[in-house]
Image 1 (spheres, rainbow, N blue to C red):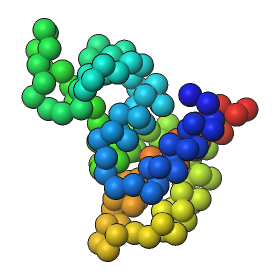
Image 2 (cartoon, one colour):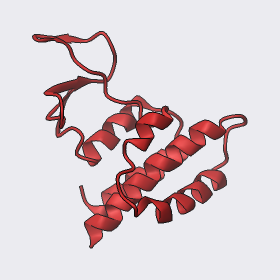
Image 3 (cartoon, rainbow, N blue to C red):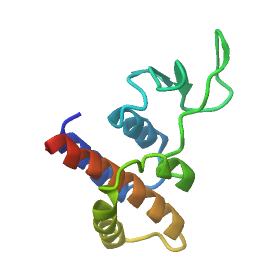
Image 4 (cartoon, rainbow, N blue to C red):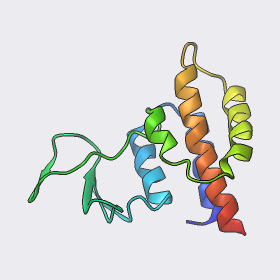
Length: 128
């Protein structure tokens, strides 16, 4: 994914609410999965198959669920693997704030700011 595509995805995350399709795009953009076939994702670093929703069964049993990056702070934090994110997180928080936090959804806004910051940091690294 190019740096422009990563930045565009980061902007969409900042403007969104929790969204499973965005979770899928984030996973593809960050290389957590490499291919998508419907609601199944292939080529995960630790698993051969992941799925969007629970209770999906493949030939080998229950496939792990794709993390809820736009809804879970723990999942969003797994994207933070680089010191560069600190500089992009402040900017992401400002953009999320400008887009207007839904009343009482401060946690959701923070989660999406982390995801967007991770994407922007990846875009910065891609552009180097």
